[in-house]
Structure formats: structure tokens, C-alpha cells
Length: 212
Image 1 (cartoon, helix red, strand yellow):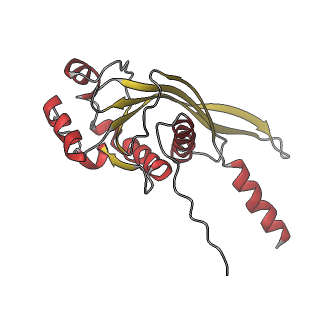
Image 2 (cartoon, helix red, strand yellow):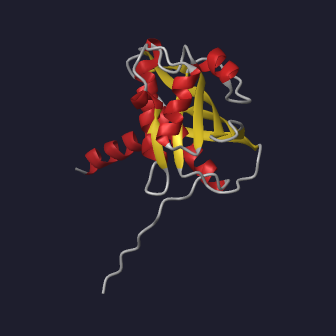
């Protein structure tokens, strides 16, 4: 029983991905955003304003493309799980737009209006790769292991001005036990902490239970 507990604890520790953020507050937070529309993109973008030209260049062919539909759903679900709470409501683009259907700029802006969002959170996965390591076991066999890594660019865009108010670059790394979902969870958790610290998001309410 003791050995089984040690094995379980070792697995838990080994499969924990980590992330860190470099960031820039383009504007100081005036108030926390309470309704966020989440968009995940898997091609390289340079988002300075979310106007029609930018949307057509970077988003229109990629916001719901079939190639990334599985990764998009996983990433946006992880972002939702780590950020959404009673004080911060999230709408996921993967649930609003059908796959492989043309979404023009007017359609996109209408969906933002319907969601009543105050900000758009764009997360751009710029790279996803594996570090490969080798070791020789007790039988003299060469064993290879792969550890996933990813880099993300994040943009928090004000829904009225359509200008980014915060930008960040997130580096995530895992162990051989990790996979895409744990990498996305780590990224989302670190992103949430940073945005709360910079006052763009509110921390979740903590309810204290007292025993009488």
C-alpha cells in the first residue's frame, strides 16, 4: 500500500506542466472585464487592432478551420475551466461558430454583440514541439521520451475600442507524462493569474464556511 502511494504521488508530480508569462500592459486597467469572448488561433498573427482588415487577414480562414478544430476545442475548454467563475463569464468561439463555415467580419461582430462581451481574449498558439531525451535502462536498452512544449501569444482586446489593452507571451513546458490538455491547462492557469494581478479580471469569490 505504501509503495502504491509513492508511485501515485510520483506520477502526480511528474505530470505537472509549468508556464511563465512575459507581458505588457498597453493600458492600465480601468475596471475588470466581466464578460469575455474567447478566440483561439493556430496561425501566426500580429494583432494591433481588431478591424475588418485584420480580421480578414488573420481570423477569417482560421477561426473555425477544420485542421485545428480538436485543438481549438481542448484549448478553449481549458481556458474556460481556469478563468470562468461567477464574476467572470466566458463565451467560447468554438461553441458559437460551426466548423468550416465562412464567418465574415459582420458575422463575427454580431456574435460579439449577442454575447454582450466587454473584451475579447485571443490566444494564439505560435509553436508546439517536443524535447526528446534518451536514457539507457538496466537492460542496456535505449529508451526515448518526449516532453511537450508550447509558446502562446495572448491579446486582451477591449470590445468597444477593438484595441489590445494587454498582451503577453506564455511559455509552457511539460514532462514525458504531459500532453496537450495539461499544457493548455498550465497556460490558462498562468494567464488567469496574470490578468487578475493586473486587475483586468476579478478573482473568484471565496466563500468561508464557519462552524458554530
